[in-house]
Length: 175
Image (tube, rainbow, N blue to C red; front, side, top):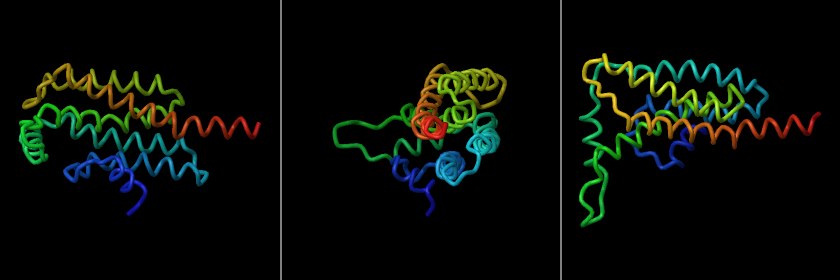
């Protein structure tokens, strides 16, 4: 197991998290560790962003419905007696948040500004929802923009706390 696997496990992400979704999270974790080794953090962020955009583009713009997968996951989640079901809407919301965390993270590392990371993540989400209007089996909704934006904000804040602030502190100490 590498650092990325530990991050995915530590975040409590269920085993149902596909390799496509877990890949960007692992890449972000490796980015943080590799930055310590002296490799350019921004260069790694740019490479990670290209990989992320390719993987996320397939998930977000493919003419397939993920409704069956979401429904199966929702019914597989154990619910305490008397609480009803977890609900497919919440599973989809959480998946959308998780999908955009790496985008906010990588953009913030690349641009060195969490506001830009979150803002560009929100704009990408709006663009994706508009694009989905013309894609069969896709239903663009405002809820997706909200959850995607939340993911980008979380990723931007994580990057700010973990990578960018550490780099700025090191620069202040040296110069």
